[in-house]
Amino acid sequence: ASRMALEHAKGPALTRDRVRIAVMANVGNADDTRMAMESGAEGVGLYRVEQAYIGRTQPPDPQELFEEMEQTLDPARGMPVCVRLLDIGADKPLPFLGFLAESNPSLGRRGIRLLLEYPELLDSQLRTILKLAEHFDLSVLVPMVCVAADMLAVRERLRAIATRQRISKLPPLGAMLETPAAVLDVRKIARHSDFVSFGTNDLTQYAFAADRENAAVERYFDDASDVIFRLLEIGCEEAGDLAVSLCGELAGRPDQVSRILQCGIRTLSVAPPLVPAIKEAIRGCTLGHQP
Ligand code: PEP
Ligand code: MG
Image 1 (tube, protein in one colour):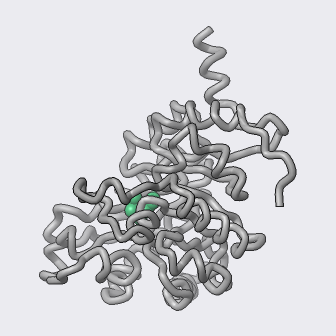
Image 2: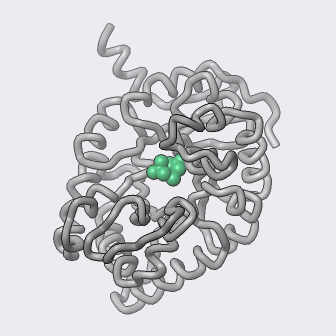
């Protein structure tokens, strides 16, 4: 019986009307990725690389960064893996950047904004990722994209580094959609993106102006509200043929899976232990006619 349960967990997730949905995992280290594979994840939908940087007095050197990323992704070798560029800001200090005093860090230099201000920090990740892409079925996600120019800038850096390293095939480059501005402007962002992924944790924080870490405003932070689903619908519509995934915590709520799929999203990425329950929820859904 347990072998049957395991095969079920590892099997694909098809809706009742036989639409295949990819269920991937969010990971931060090798233990997460191992657990994800044991739980039947079909790849890594979001690798948060922050653990390789936080608590260090110097940024990891290229060899250290390569080893850390390779170790984390190793259990998922042969499967699609998505590495997100460093998503950090003034709220999480990196001693080697100096002190970035900001009165409003979540509206300040975080994610791609910080990386564009410290190009060497961006370039070292892109170099490592290009090297990793020789060994993995890898794509790259850009955090905190707000305007198309953010993606264009990363695309240009990636191209320049690949040219220098004589690499002709670039890994797919995707934008995180985690601000209302990015969602509403996804048509323009899409010109420089190969895929997009909704980050509903931040999208909720920025849509409701409610700090995701502040319990005092928790009642405003509703990631399953009609407002968020309206944003998901608009984003999916505007994204056209671009592949769209969802990697915020909303994706890990079995009771919301049907609504998420109704928006047109076909890839979910969730915390490793949630993979089996989300696959089961998908198997109970009927999509009916889809746009
Ligand atoms: C999100 O914002 O939904 C997301 C997936 O990214 P993080 O939780 O790492 O900010
Ligand atoms: Mg986020």
